[in-house]
Length: 198
Image (cartoon, rainbow, N blue to C red; front, side, top):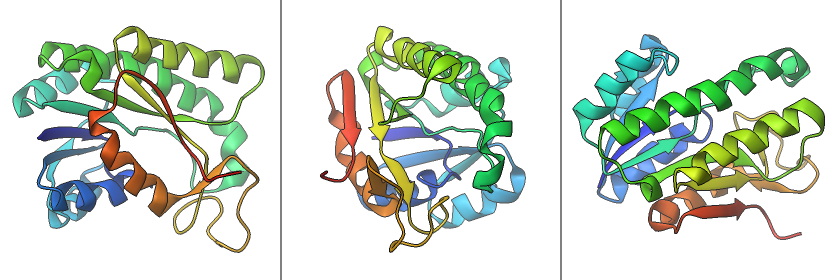
């Protein structure tokens, strides 16, 4: 399968690329920064440097790759958890506008709705953040896509790197989250939760 993975250099994306390659898929790994392209190439992906907010360029790279499936693992979050509050609007924009652009590019490339998978969260946010998350998910579901609701991630590269001090449930180790994503390539449209047993 030809898979266009947006957010390939993110905390889940970097783990997904080698898993997908090992499974025999051809992967285009999209990142916003050229500095991360070499690492994606070394992992076996075809690196694509593109900003999801540049709708024209995004459509060109997605249609040029001609994917069978598009996976949306994009977020706009800080490296430091203490800065999360400052990134709320940025991440909301990624969820709203970024998702809209990626869905449009997938449609232009002829990708059916059921072959669009998007990362979301398994816990409930309050107020405007919660409304924005619901609206983002509705975009994907209305297009016939699949929402993957991950628990709070822990393990190397996450806000909770110490496996002995994980976040409260719902949670999932980041390596397990990536491994659990691969079988979802054939998931039926709807919502899937990827969390540890309570």
